[in-house]
Amino acid sequence: MKSSETSERLVHVPLGDRAYDILIGPGLIGRAGGEISTRIKGRKAAIVTDENVANHYLEALIDSLEADGIDATSLILPAGEKTKSFEHLTRVCDALLEARIERNDTVIALGGGVIGDLAGFAAGIVRRGVRFVQMPTSLLSQVDSSVGGKTGINTRHGKNLIGVFNQPDLVLADTDVLQTLSDREFRAGYAEVAKYGLIDKPDFFVWLERNWRDVFAGGAARIEAIATSCQAKAEVVVADERETGRRALLNLGHTFGHALEAATEYDSSRLVHGEGVAIGMVLAHQFSARLNLASPDDAERVETHLKTVGLPTRLSDIPGELPPPEVLMRAIAQDKKVTGGKLTFILTRGVGQSFVANDVPCSEVVTFLEEKHPQ
Ligand code: GLY
Image 1: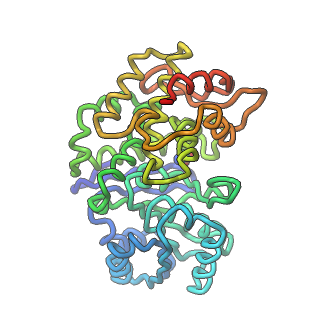
Image 2: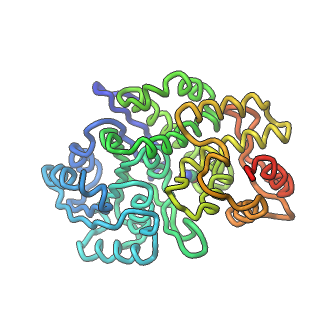
């Protein structure tokens, strides 16, 4: 990681001929044209974005691209998870072909995880692959989904079941855009930041415990936290790009989290992804303590920190009624492969000591959920 004269950070993802840079800092939308034109030959770009983001940033991005001689078209899609569909994939592919985007031209995903996943998928399949730049506009997408090359859409069979690994050519994470996020959205993204400390960076978790107020306030600490998160993710992705092992660690808290999202029918008024991950990470630490793998003090420490920043940490923090433990278990089993009554789970030996366990008995999970269930 290197720092420039400004507070900007650069994280390099060394993936051989698919290596790329992640730039993190203020004002990157205004400098996007320059950053892209020094790295990508084509003089055409197609911006894929959503209605909310377009209102704030599309014009500034087009101006920046055109100032550097890049001819830009744009496609504005509805905001929200439903946009990650075959229908919208078709729309994006048609728009790219209509705009005559060639292999050396660029698709720019300007938005959160939904836009990044959808536009990245389209960029990977149109003309068997065109250039692709991620410009993530939520904290969650800046620290997670824009890095690592997972792209795709949802189907009635589940989330992210159709897609390709398609690493971007560049990630431009403009930290100024985070100022328009609601407190709730920022906190939800922060759960994924804390996740990197809990996976294998205990010193980072200590740093967050001490500096979280500055991270929430913005400025240098926020940029530092995002850069450390991107660096942590890059290390995991470089070690296991296609998730045959270690990359699964990035799912810490997600097994319980996804089940809770499904149990609340993806109703964002009750629970958003990062909140599910926060509760899921606390449960993963408590479950590890229950299995005598970790000290209950670690689970308490994790809960205290996430609660202090204002995240939900318990099942009872979710508004409305939750389905019973067996139904939650069914949602977990749907998300994960179950073999002989056992499933793969990210467990921990303590803060910063997560590991992939392949043989967790479903019966233990149900008993644990019965203890934690509010009804
Ligand atoms: N968000 C998990 C991964 O990129 O593998």
